Length: 404
Image (cartoon, rainbow, N blue to C red):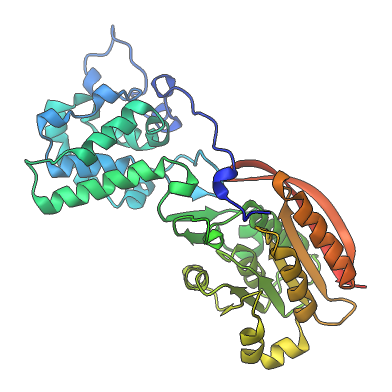
């Protein structure tokens, strides 16, 4: 079996026609509809954006104009795996784009003369709220490409570099998850704030490449994290849930969502992954203000980890957490080996494993279940669940194992 290629997953569906959409933000504005017979000051109103509303390069727009417009076209921060994000307030839009209200107001006089459909703050905010839909169309993608290819001779060289950088980011952000640059993903889970006091979990994800799949958050980790939150009690509160036996080891932590969820619930948790994944994993732990152990663990060569943590590994872990661990035929025996090495020989010790049902990996999943049984593990629970990730809807299987 070849290694997993994220490009083999399907792309999101085509969005609706941007010329027929008025975003919810616009609907909430006091002037969100046009009545030509009764409105005299129509230039201040907000309408669906057309490519002809954007300033032409032939008008030689100043650097400030292009930078503001390009930043407003940046995508909203992602929440879980949703392709359409929540409506943001003015402050949230500006903060996530690195802009201020003063910067918007400063470009209005030029826009009034050369791009009147974008000459008010509400109209500029409408551009931002419509960005995902607009940039899915050939006309807007061509507009961004023209900015990148233009020498912009009327603008200082330093500003040209900034403009072309922003334009290149907008282009890559709209070429699918496998082409996107670094993103910050907000994870929201049902009951998270009520149980832990946190509104969300923040995950930094560098660009996705086939050789560093652990730098992306996958759907399995979201479902397993929700399961931990729903089934297990927060150590600092009496909420009627089960107690998660500690210490806890997460194998193949990736961006760290599952291991951090265990840590947020108050359990002593070790997060592990390959050397090239660990720096971003540590950064995510820091971003979420957690004190958790993050260490390198190569499943093919675990001796270094065992030597560094002799006492812990000799005693074993009471709980092992694993999400989406199979990307090639080599992984099933490695996963089983890690569980055999590190799960404590105790009747209450458990392995919790969440894995997507990818069509091309039936043999690898079957081999994993077979090898777990051969290694002396017994299935306590097995459940199928519907979920999703950046590539669409997906079926997932959850299994709970104990030593037979």
